[in-house]
Amino acid sequence: MSTTVTNDEASQYAFSNAYERGSQLRLLAEILDGHTTQVLADTGIAQGWRCLDLGPGQGTITHWMAERVGPTGNVTALDLDPHNVVPADNITVRADDVRTCDLPEGHYDLIHTRLVMLHIAERDLVLTRLIAALKPGGLLVVSDWDGTRRDWMVHAPTEAAGEAFDAFQAGLLAELEAHGADLGWARRSPVAMVAAGLQDVETVVHSRLWAGGEPGCLLHLSNSHQMRDALLARGVTTEQLDRLAEAMHNPDTLAYCYWMFTSVGRRAQK
Ligand SMILES: C[S@@+](CC[C@H](N)C(=O)[O-])C[C@H]1O[C@@H](n2cnc3c(N)ncnc32)[C@H](O)[C@@H]1O
Image (cartoon, rainbow, N blue to C red):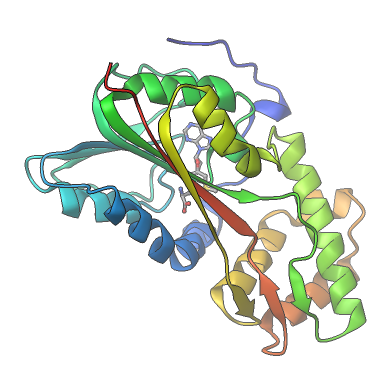
């Protein structure tokens, strides 16, 4: 199945995997891989499985899966820009757009995708394509952050730092939405997976608090650097960005790095 994708802003992924040589992706791996590997281990992933890691970014989960499936299995790492994924014998690296590329039908035992569907405007179509690519009985694991809450700062070192954090989040999320992101997708995803025909859909919600200087706060900082021009264009001030930077290094700060909804669903046997 293929579709036509326009080339307007709402169809373009907002971040760059090359920015600061992938620093955002390394932080995501530090923050999230413990959670993701726990969920993937519970799927029973085993030697010989054929897997797809959609939007692998840094590729740490691709490599974890490749270790599990061994030399008789394979993991395809499919990304618009997979240049950070280190190749290996049982890893197939594909530079492609999941909205339009050819996907094999009924092929995969397991498909994993983290922080990708939220960004893709055509996510419902992509969900249908991913399910069609699963073998009967195959598993789909979808993780995304919920962008609907606005209370991620739990303890700000100063009132001004709290206001700067809120201004940054409002600007960042508006920019992502302009690029096609759906901030409510994570909450909607379990229902969408059932509606798309998956069975036994189960969801866990994961988060933790991070102090200034720790990976969750450093990710907010990294995103503020990468999106600096867009944030300024959306009315965030340089003073606010300076205060944000101080707060994200201040050990008195305590903030969430969003709430992650991770759902696992199974394609019907017939
Ligand atoms: C926020 S990063 C998440 C990376 C990784 N999954 C993680 O959680 O650490 C989103 C990734 O999805 C990829 N991506 C975005 N849109 C895509 C598309 N239409 N087709 C394939 N990959 C896409 C990006 O290039 C990027 O690597």
